[in-house]
Image: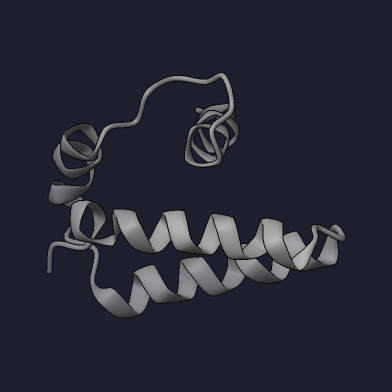
Length: 77
């Protein structure tokens, strides 16, 4: 489980990692009943973390966009 965020983040940005297709994300997140406010908080925390580690504005925007594109597969409540 420790490596999951690394693989998932790499897959969102086109890196060589496991394929996290929307149907897979929906299946594993549905039981957790994640609400939009929780999803938004996660995106903001991730944004702050990337900025703290000096990712470029373009890199941060790419990750945010890809996370937002996955919102329908993650938010279920």
